[in-house]
Amino acid sequence: MDEEQRKILLESASRFPKPQGVKLSYGTAGFRADASILSSTVFRVGILAALRSLKTQSFIGLMITASHNQVSDNGVKVADPSGGMLTQEWEPFADAMANAVDAEDLVQLITDFAKKENISFGADHSGQVLLGRDTRPSGESLLEAAKQGVNSIVGSFAADKGVLTTPQLHWMVRCANKGMRVSELDYFEQLSNSFGCLIDLIPQKTMLQLMDDTLKVDGANGVGGEKLEELKKLLKGLVIQVHNSGKEGGFLNDRVGADYVQKEKIVPCGFGPNDVGIRCASLDGDADRLVYFRVLSESNNKIDLVDGDKILSLFALFMKEQLSILNKKENENANNDHPVQLGVVQTAYANGASTIYLKQMGLEVVFTPTGVKYLHEKAADYDIGIYFEANGHGAILFSEHFLCWLEAKNSELASISKGTEQQKAALRLLAVSKLINQAVGDALSGLLLVEAILQHMGWSIQKWSELYQDLPSRQIKVKVADRTAVITTNAETVVVRPSGLQEVIDAETDKYAKGRSFIRSSGTKDVIHVCAEASTQEAADSLAK
Ligand code: G16
Image (cartoon, rainbow, N blue to C red; front, side):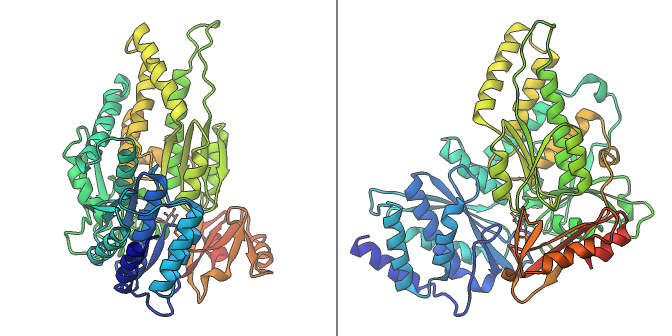
């Protein structure tokens, strides 16, 4: 690092002093804390993003959001060149940067890291960082801090993409690195065109079945509702009513949104008895989670929750069906099978009934710790990898190799005889690969795929919900002084520290029929999550307690 670069960094870092006594770590999804203490962290992550861009010679993303957290929190995370999460190899550097005590300490850290990673500075080496933020009031000033961080690396450039959902920003990074167009309109067009393609391919016989085309969406008073209002203008064959769009005066994630609906299992604000019989969905604050629900008629605000596990099951069923049509042998002697590796990834939060259901379908199911960064990585091992967390984060990933094969197969089938069932299956799979955001879980694209599949099957939400019956479960959050005191292993199913705690959990769990329980420390808040399953709701509640 030359003298000029050093001077710029020292000068800019001194404008963003780190608050004393604050220690942050790059958790499940980046840094999160009360927004009032985050400007130095966001500034430093701006520098990190610029360095990552220099290192990879690619576009990098920086998103300012605290997703499902309360409105007074905010956060920051980095998207790698693929559009996925920042490589885990750089997380310790992110932690060290966020916690560097002063400007001198910070510059020393950057100098050492750049040397180790062979990162060159100077005007000939340019970094490009795309910036996005959700609708939190603190987002604007934090975005300015991020910009100054990026710009303090000579030759690096920050492009402000404005207010976005988290998945939109990830999508833009991925597309920018593929040399594709990255405007918001391009994103909306990709989603609406591929959705339209799936709708056009619906078999005649199900077209005749009556299915309500109205969907009521809870936008969590966040960015998702606002974007869905835009997207729906391009959609045909679906009526979407957006509620809790943020314009009606409620607070972000306050008794609304996917996290609230999934954890509490009750209707969000703005929904009630009038919605009985309507298909409802809920997004979270930055629109990377999606759950469905229906309001129960005997209701006391109770819902039938159709969570990430059921979305995963619906997707798996559809993908398996299309693959089997595609690979159907025309005659006994033909050998047109392509052994497609279809895998499913879940976490310990997955309802036990969903795992049994998926395995009964003959699918390979693997488990990772909580966090899209782990599930996404695992799903990428397959030709088609479907991952979902019960909380509604998920996607379907297609390998490049499989997509090439599929394109070729589609052309071959079209040249023999266009419009056969086999060719339609190829076209559907190709449409899914464009509809589902390949960079990260995306509630808007997931919602359109759910809607397309329900129409394809001619299914109501009730029919979908009956795919299997969830085992009664309960999740609770326990506020603790130090969440790092709990260390787990085996995809978070076993507590390693504090010692002796797992034995206590096991002894308690053994008292319940079909009992299963685990605890893990949150990666986004100062709480410990407790999750319990048992044969009745009372038993699950009691075990969790
Ligand atoms: C983030 C991650 C998710 C993860 C969630 C867990 O969600 O992106 O993969 O499931 O955190 O949160 P915690 O660690 O508090 O249990 P989000 O929607 O907040 O970005």
